Image 1 (cartoon, helix red, strand yellow):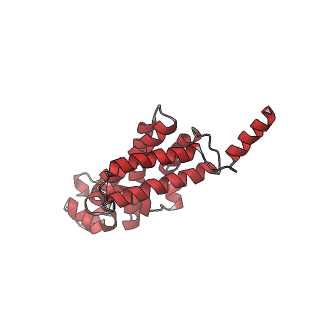
Image 2 (cartoon, helix red, strand yellow):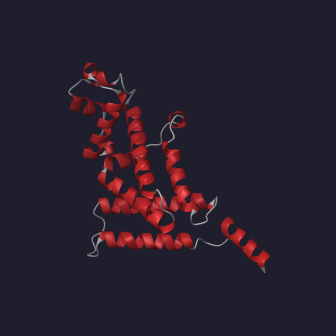
Image 3 (cartoon, helix red, strand yellow):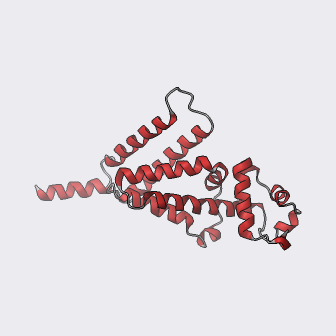
Length: 205
């Protein structure tokens, strides 16, 4: 099948599609080879091993997710940007469960990360959105971790049918975003942001 035009990129995309269909934890080189109608050995010209294949899927998915988020938040700020970020994140995760699982399950080798910017780009997009709330480090990192945890937890519970109450899941999601916006607008005192604001207020008085 390598003779029929297999490439590393095509193999990775097929693995990502397979992950969406059967679950990221179920992708194997053998299953992927069967989907192409070739022997396992034919794929080893394009990926080193299963770990390499899974890292490639994770990087592909992280790049796709970053692209979705970047397009969604472009030209927006504050609550509008945060909601657009959250909706893009959730929509991608629900539409591509295997790809999304790869971004959560795989920590690529440091050497692989050094050659890729996709994870750094997601962090940059997150921080750019949060700076509209006048947050600085370490609050940028803390708030980013909070948002990721909230989005991920909601998505996993939703995907697994964990919300059985009669209230619409979408309505709860929208209220959750309202709550996160309020929290970001009222980030706990004692952070560098608040210290700077208090200093400026003291100077004015």
